[in-house]
Amino acid sequence: MARGKIQIKRIENTTNRQVTYSKRRNGLFKKANELTILCDAKVSILMLSSTGKLHEFISPSTTTKQIYDQYQRSEGVDLWNSHYERMQENLKKLKEVNRSLRKQIRQRMGDCLNELSFKELLGLEQDMEEAVKVIRERKYKVLSNQIETTNKKLKQARQINKNLLIEFDAREDDPHYGLVDNRGDYESVIGYSTEIVPRMFALRLQPNQPNLHSGTGSDLIAYPLLE
Image (cartoon, rainbow, N blue to C red; front, top):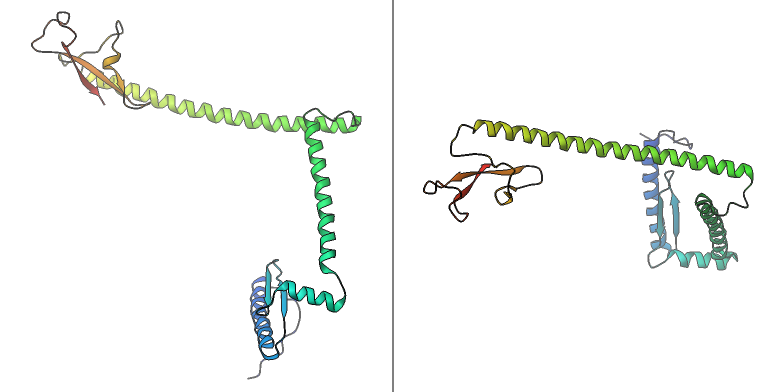
């Protein structure tokens, strides 16, 4: 059955359009390669899809620059010079934008204000007030996050303290254990395993040393109460 003739018009469906482009591009490149081999021709093809993607075919042992140079000699034109001029023009515009931005930055720092009119000064003031407003809102947001984090840590510390008190109360009836009050230097018997969870110790009297004050300091043994 013979294939129907395809009407040449823009394909509206995006997917179908991309599929057709891919198939016909490959077919075109295949024909260009055959032409290069059969006729010893130099072929260069540049294609840009609707999505802006570049595809290129160049004859083997040939560069795009060689094709352009030969085209320039044949047509008597200078592609590189015109391209250079466009690049110079674009560079000039970019430098102008850069100078304008630097000037605006200096004005926001309080410099280069003498050349501004009242209207321009008023606009600059409004812009800076808006910037300060955004900065202040961000500052309050950061501060709020810090306060929230601190509150979470305090809540966790209170819960740890509550758990410790419960453990102390549970061991209050054991005659071999007791808590140290704050009337001396007991740093040697209190330690911390982490920044959050403390390790606390109780003191126990040696069975053969009933007098706490008669020895040289070795009368006490430190036992881990909670870990």
